[in-house]
Image 1 (cartoon, one colour):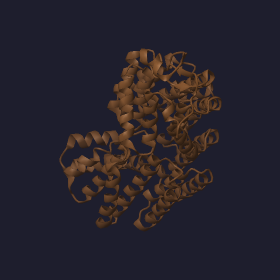
Image 2 (spheres, helix red, strand yellow; image 1 turned 60 degrees about the vertical axis):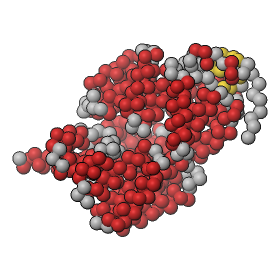
Image 3 (tube, one colour; image 1 turned 120 degrees about the horizontal axis):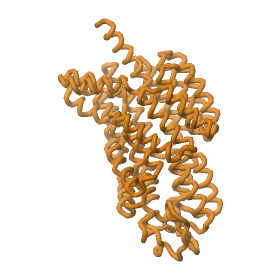
Image 4 (cartoon, helix red, strand yellow; image 1 turned 90 degrees about the horizontal axis):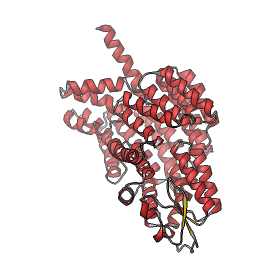
Length: 491
């Protein structure tokens, strides 16, 4: 589709002021190494910039609000559509705005085209194309601190920690006072369990932005991960005092009580977060976090009720992936293969029915997790033929899928190898799925079988110390700690 001439073009110099130029090719942004943003409206450009600042400060609902304002002023604002697509939790809006950004790709600069290809590519599971576009951007604008931060942030979200650290440090090299980069460094240090460095980074973040809620929220999370629960709770309350609508900290109160083992209190805090959440996607997510608390208590009947209610609510809100996920999670903790298979069939039915309404990357990643659950249940039932069949389907997805899907495959493959007593091969696969407590628990056993005592002990300590709330954590960590305590008591 040919885009009509936009007339005078506005270039938003990222992290600088708005500058005017007659055509994209003469943009001053190309001369000073900062990323250009094309729009026909100076006011739209200002809204886009304030939205990006909100995004950096993890005020995603405010970012979306400002980008919507930008589009109302300039309906042909390609990057505003792109960032809404990348940030929204509404699957219909994500799909609609991704299509609009792609339709406008011919009207913007080569750099903006690369950003659209990056973000559209990873959402459509055109992963190779998306990563290549991201790499192109990094080469075009190596001195743009925000672009380095954004690339690092995305890499962090897909667990590519070393590459994320490289880009985040580049952002800080450009501006040692760039607050959001200290936030990101804190999370990166936490993933390697360097909690003192993580807390130090967050203290710098708080010092730079003392009156913003997110620095206190992030500081609280680092304190929680280091085991300082009461100090963490205090920081979340400071964040909520600064802004009582900062729903992220309300959710984090629930997360902290959950990993402390105070599940009833966690449910109460999650209920408040569900109420405060600004979008249906977040409400659906938080409902499932509340349901997860019953898994830590091993109250599986109550978990079933909570997940079924969460699925029904997700259905009513049009949150199809969350609806499917509720059934998949219920299947994960079923003791027998037959009821688990029926739940997984239901999850797959929902995904298939709504496959054109959600991002392909979200659809495929959930499908991959369903296949992993099928492999695990088949292995548990000693039905290795079925396990191999499901694993082959998962392998096919992993060959062209995201890093998340590749790690899901490695975890499933390691599970099968372990039951086949191929311990060395199991280690190789399970090590790839390093952010999944289920895989870490299996990896400990594989290490023990291969006489890798030091590696087994390191993984054992890591699992006991795990404080990142996930379904896998809820299913594995509390029961593993209880087993360890029983062993210690006998000795």
